[in-house]
Image 1 (cartoon, helix red, strand yellow):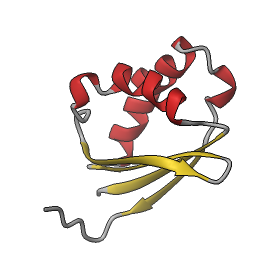
Image 2 (spheres, rainbow, N blue to C red; image 1 turned 180 degrees about the vertical axis):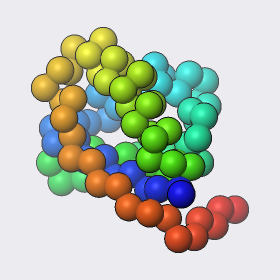
Image 3 (spheres, rainbow, N blue to C red; image 1 turned 120 degrees about the horizontal axis):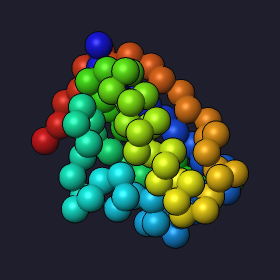
Image 4 (cartoon, rainbow, N blue to C red; image 1 turned 90 degrees about the vertical axis):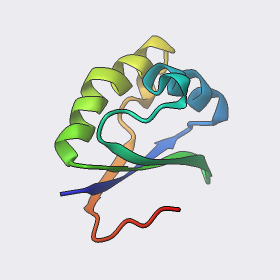
Amino acid sequence: MAVVIVNEIEGGNEDFYEQVNPKVMPGGQLPDGCKLHIAGPVDNGWRVITVWDSEDQFQQFRDEKLIPAIREVGSEERIAPQIKTDPVHNLITA
């Protein structure tokens, strides 16, 4: 079942995002299983919203790519963002 992942990184900012993003989405390509990626600033940090084919695919991406990329840019304290996962009932794109 498809899931929407809302990832809020307190203290995150555009610079942090621009350092991590190319490591996890080279060439701006979505990872396997990811259908949608939205990112931008929020009060106190940065938010990334993604839609995945399954929660398992997101967890694999998180463990194998995202966390190592965050560590690589030296932001160990940002490894535990608030992550909310909910089922997707319907996804319509242009």
